[in-house]
Length: 308
Image (cartoon, rainbow, N blue to C red):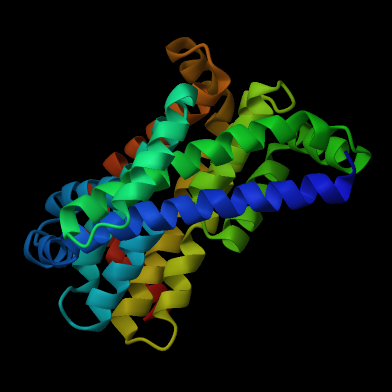
């Protein structure tokens, strides 16, 4: 198989992954859009409440970028303050890890039935069956894409340029952070970036510490969506986007020297490489958000001084 064919297939599987995320999210959002915005505006008067709501809504929508875009929009419309948005941001980082845990589950035999059942429900004119169909069909697409990524990992690694990139990532973790940041900024999905990393991990082409480095970079790259949504908005909406960037950059900077420790910890928690990477994402985001929660107000002042 030639390089062009492999890259074409990779692009197809990436498109399937992103379409699956979009279909699943749109069905869930259609079912609960008003409720989602209501929760975000009513129950975020305290940072810890915002964190819990951020986890809940992001877990439901399976996209921290979508939650942050909604949050930026609510801040721009005056329904939320910049201070309130920080708690939601902390929670959205934790909630975004649910999808990476989900895609590590082996349900190969159920993928085709999920696609068929989900597709049939998409023709329903009723909201609940349509939402169910969207969720099931979208989830099936995610697993199709993950299987595709894994099938292409070894053929892709046979090319010298890819071998050099993998070797560079394994040897220099900062390069991995850069790859994760750039790839996520381009494809607008940290979950897809992590999924691609998992395929290389499962084929022993990427070390776990290198995979963690890419995952850390993906957390920075995912900030681009909210930043783009804030362009042209009021000052507080822009501050929300800047806070998202600063929080993730600081979190990655703190955890970067701890990659060997995190790698050792998740190796004790799971034997499968993809599950280890999913656990590392969860641990990183939970610890980062938990440590930041008591300092929300000083952090808000820091962002205001820098970008106010």
